[in-house]
Length: 347
Image 1: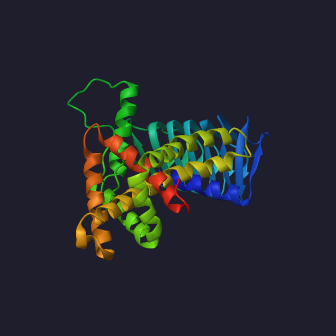
Image 2: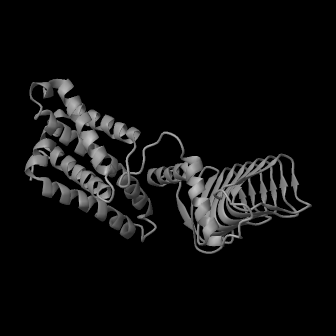
Image 3: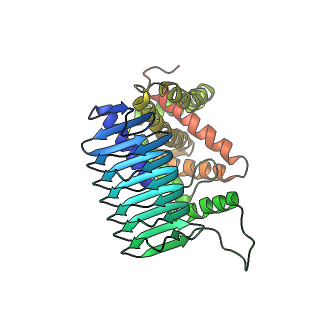
């Protein structure tokens, strides 16, 4: 997951900075494909993607079907996300595949990592490193396949009962997703707002609120005043941001020229959600600080107000059924309060 997000961010930077961007449909990449290149690194995406050429750097490929033919050669690492993937070329680095089904029947000098449902190593597979796969089923390895390292399979289905009946494919996919998320996101983290918020999540947003309050005290005061006098306009402005920005991104992405700007808008959307919730804590904390008398004055009072605000919002988001509504009001209202606070004259 983190690797996919990093690649998306890198592509956005390359396109918007003008380092190298091109769209092409040729014999090298069959069908209508969109490709970005920076130096020797290549990112290609299409519904049906066939690559049969040399790539001097790393290759990132995404599509419903991704095929690397025997003529494909990748000097760096290869990353594939697809519904079905087939690799028959010569890969000099590591290979990472996220797919429902994958066939590896070529040469990979590095390690192989697979996340999905079905992995097959064909008779011409020649792996120089280890093969690590996460799947509810055992990988099928042809007897002529060569793997110099170890083959490590991890069953990411949920625990089975003794002699259980065969599970349908859809059920296996659901259990794979649940177990996968549990394995790789266990430990301290910020829980997804709208369903529940962990203590570390409340602390994280509280720290951001403190930064806003101490870095922009005048703006925070305006936000507090807007919270009292203009809560409905603030909420409306935030809802316009939350609903309008994805719609605008979709409309902009219709054209290839607007695609990088659509990516930028999609990156700004979660940033607005984070700042919105922190903005609500800053404004609400300033309001509470003014209601606790002498103890609420000065820097210490501002910290106490934000801590109290974070505790209240944390409890509110944790209330069953109402938590999502509390989160929506806090995020949307905070976005609107930030806008009103940053304006020279309030509405």
